[in-house]
Amino acid sequence: MDIERQFIGLKESDEKVLQYIYVSNYPKVEQFILGNSGTTDDAHDIYQEAFLAVWRNVQLDKFRPQNETAVAGYIYQIARNKWLDQLRSVKNKKTADLPDEISHQLADTPQLDDAEMGYLELVKEEYERLGDPCRELLNRFYFKKESMREIAAHFSWTEASAKNNKYRCLQRLRNMIINKKENGIP
Image (cartoon, rainbow, N blue to C red; front, side):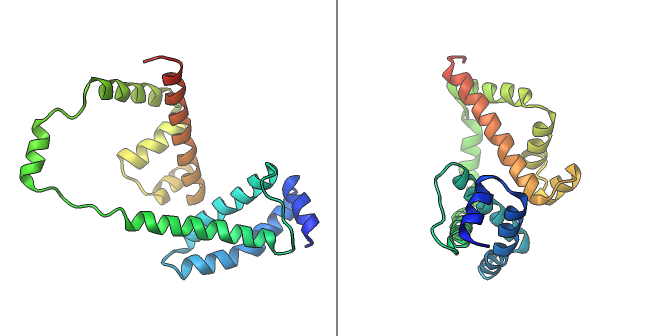
């Protein structure tokens, strides 16, 4: 497919062009992720994020392909960077148990000051206003410690959809909190 047709198809959200670009560029990204400690599910999630980023950037006139391989290269580069970022974040998230004496000291000291308690109350209030689907999704993930696979099955979604919906729910909660704080409401 020529570059102008790809560009116009992305710009106008032409279903056939989007499908062509999506299907034809996935194998290279999957090969990279599988070759770098990833799974097929990881590849699907990362590829979907990369594809959406390219599509959004074309829509916002932040990217205009200059040659026949520009879209494929751009998708691959974004996916590669996202995967490497994910690998780095997992590598840096090593945890260790605190010695018993420090744990006891922390248990005996108040954890939150008044400002922090106020913020926590704000988060609780906005969480309640979030709406049932988002509350249930976040509750299942953060409090019940369910996996994305379990959450996706419960809602009859794909894992990628579950991850995207979790992200959107968190963003909505953050925006609600920020809006309330910016409007001077404690």
